[in-house]
Amino acid sequence: MSIIEVKVPQLSESVSEATLLTWHKKVGEAVQEGENLIDIETDKVVLELPAIKSGVLVKIIKADGAKVGSGEIIAQIDSAAVAAAPKAKADVAAAVSPSARKLAHAHDVDATGLQGSGKHGLVTKEDVLNAVQQPAATVQTQSAPAVAPAGNRTEQRVPMTRIRQRIAERLLQSQQNAAILTTFNEVNMQPVIELRNKYKDAFEKKHGVKLGFSSFFVKAAVLALQKYPVVNASVDGTDVIYHGYFDIGVAIGSERGLVVPILRDADKMSLAEIEKRIVDFGARAKDGKLSMEELTGGTFSISNGGVFGSMLSTPIINPPQSAILGIHATKDRPVAENGQVVIRPMNYLALSYDHRIIDGREAVQFLGTIKEALEFPGRVLLDL
Image 1 (spheres, rainbow, N blue to C red):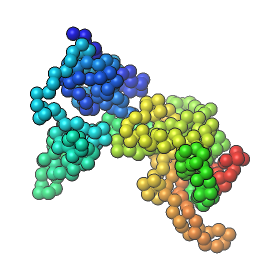
Image 2 (cartoon, rainbow, N blue to C red; image 1 turned 180 degrees about the vertical axis):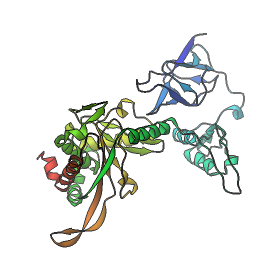
Image 3 (cartoon, helix red, strand yellow; image 1 turned 45 degrees about the horizontal axis):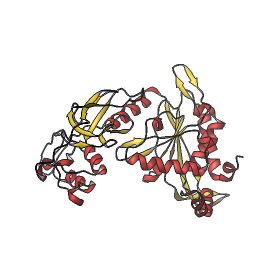
Image 4 (spheres, helix red, strand yellow; image 1 turned 180 degrees about the horizontal axis):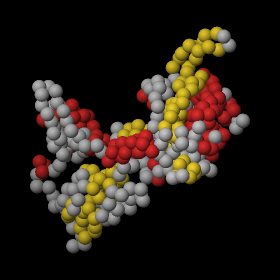
C-alpha cells in the first residue's frame, strides 16, 4: 500500500479557513492524476483540488461541508491500488454536470439523488432547477433545512454560502467604519455611442473582442483618479495612503454572489485590453475560476447596475478603498440644450465616497471629470 495524503492547498494570508463542497469521488473509486477531487470554497473563490497521483480513493477524512485550513489532510489515495468494478449499476452514484453541482450546492440539494435527464443519466442544471421548484418536502437536501408547511405556503431555511457570508461582512464593515456619502451627476452618452457605432466592427475585427461601454468608463475613471489622487487613496488608522498606481475593481454579479476582480495598472491598458479582461473575468466568475490574487487589492471600484436595468443606486464602498462609481442604465430622456428640449441617451452616475478623507468639493469635481471625459471621449483617447 502506497498512501498519498490529500491536503488543502495553501490559502492566502487573508483567508483563515475554507469549506469543502461536494466530493466528486467516493471511497473505493479510481482517480486519475490531475482529476478534480473536490471543490473548496473560500470567502473569495472556489478552488479545485486535483489528485497529485493516480490510484484509489481509500479514505475521506473530511466530509462535504467541513471547515478546513491550509495544509489540512482531508483524504487518502492508495497509488498502488486498483478500483474494484461496481457490483451493479444501481450502486453507482449519478454523474452530475459542473453547473448542476454548483447550483445544487447553492440550494442545498443532493444532486446525486436526482434522476438525470442528460446523456447516460447525467444530472443537468435543469434537473436541479426542477428539484428546487418542487414542494420543499419532496426535495432531498444535504442539511435537511427546516420547512414550515402552511397549506401551499412553505418556508425553507438555507445556510448562506461562505462567499455570501463574506459579502455580508464586508458590506457591514464598510458602512460601520466609513463615513459614506453619495453624490450624483448625469452624462450624455451620445458621443460615446456614436464613436462606438462608427468603429465597433473594425475594432472587433482587429482585436477579436466587442467594443463595449465598460472600457470607456474605466478610462474616464482613471483620468479622474489621476486628477484627484485622494479618491484613489485609502485610510489606514490615522494615515492616508496615496496609491501611485490605478488598480480598478470591476464588480461582476454571478449565481454565487458578487465578485470584484481587479484590472491591474488600468492606466496602462488599451480599450481592447480592458474589454478582453472584463469578458474573461465574467466568464470565469460564473464558474468560480477567478484566483485569489485577481480578487485581492484594488484602489477604486466600478459597479454597473445598468446591465440589470438599474436606473439609480447608492453603491457601497469596497473596503479599504475610499470610493466607488455606480453606473446605471442609459435611457432616452428629454434634456435642455441651448434653450431647447431634446432627447438624449442619458446615464445617471453615482459616486459613493468616504467623507473622512474626501471632501464634497473633490467628489463633485471628480464626478464632473468623468462626465466630461464621456461627453468628449476623443480627449480620453488622445490623452488631452
